[in-house]
Structures are given as structure tokens and as C-alpha cells.
Image (cartoon, helix red, strand yellow):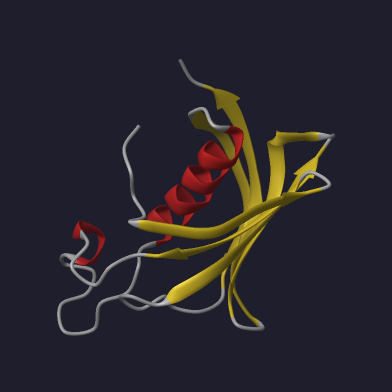
Amino acid sequence: MTRFVEQISDLRKVDGTITAQVQVPADAVWFDGHFPGNAILPGVAQLAAVVQVISKALDRPVGVTHVSRVRFKQAILPSECIDVQITPKEDSLLSCGFRLLKGPELVCSGFLKLCEME
């Protein structure tokens, strides 16, 4: 499995809900050219981080089949720590809502449908 986030810490599963902290290092390839002199983490990298947290929590790789209602509210800068909250829908993490936060502030939210990968 390709790793997009170098550090996932404080991973917890409580009543099906997953929480974790992620950090993308300043020298990650995600920041190359996005944007020179004012680097921010692209939206696709934010989604990849959510998927990586779910894969780690399930201890198996998952793929994305559907993305909906994604809202990007703030930029994520190099090396910032982000709190990830993932809430299952339909009693399965393969259908879930997610939120990325910087402290109490919402950075990104949306819904994902996933499938198990081999």
C-alpha cells in the first residue's frame, strides 16, 4: 500500500468511529508545485490521508468507489498536525463521513464509499 501520510498517531476506534492525528512533512511530494512559495496540501492528498487512516484502522487496504459532498474550508500547510474523524454510515466504515480539523476549526469534510482491496 502506498503511504501518503508519514505519520499517523493516536489512532483510536470507539463504537465504530475512528479518530487519529496525521501530519504530512514539509518535504512531501504533495507540496511540489502546489503552490511555489505558498505550499498547501492538495484536496486529493487530504482524501488520500483519510483513506490511509481507514486502511490502517481496518488493517487492510481499501479503495475509493465514490466521493461526495466534499467541502474544503481551509488550507493545510506543510507539517501541520490535522485531526481526522471518521464516522461509519450504514454500520460500515466502507461508507463513512469524515472531518479534518485543525484544533476546533473544520478544514475539510465529506463522504466516502470504499471497497476492500486485495
